[in-house]
Length: 315
Image (cartoon, rainbow, N blue to C red; front, side, top):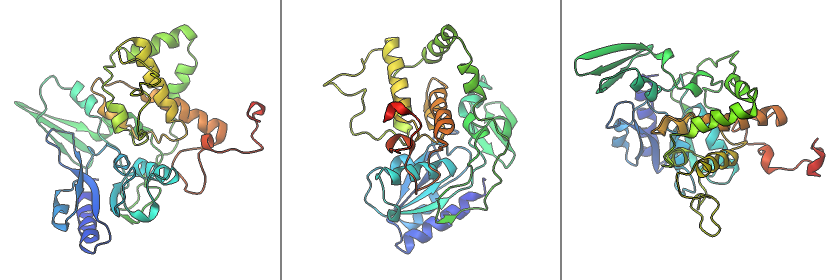
């Protein structure tokens, strides 16, 4: 996957040179290890700034909302699925986009790597199978497969669903993956144990809203947490307010979330908040046979009505 950079630069420079797009959205090297930054380029010569490796976990679909330009965008599997959702929800038009598809082999979990080292990590070098972390007086080699983000370990849509040109050959999709083992364990808990679990899970939340800002689905002009007339949720660190924020945000993502992991990746407290959206993803799959972002030809189950819906209470 490290070798994708050359092809991405080549395609991006060509698109800009030929005037097929007005800009390309991709990634550049970050100022901190494992923190590549979203980057917008408008000139062919700037394509040399683009990079691709296991530190490109932010979902670039987040930067498409309501844009008017003709845009080239680099998209791995989950990004492409969110692009489909954006098109369905009329946040961007398909003919505005040139999608550079990137078959993905998984993103590095920076939280996990930092937890494995008591010293400051100053450099991270990624190879095909290994990741080398370096700091003052130490160097450690880690197997890449052991330090992937949790969502990447269970991903079955690594290849882009929609694209105009590929930056590499398609990769083999993972099979026989149990995506909801952790959710079933929570479902099996008693009511009291569930309460304790979620209380502990959210106890460190500082309400920074980084998860909301990174999520490609959170594009409301005014978020419910910012409303004051009426005020839906308090601004304090009261546990009830914290729970309300996370639960309501998850429900807003129901039938739309692609489990891209951007929320967990940016959380400064390392909160595993994907359990909320994964539960709703599991319900949509079981109740409606629906996975978000796999087709442009069908609307999500929660924004459509079918006369033959099996639930009588809806009629």
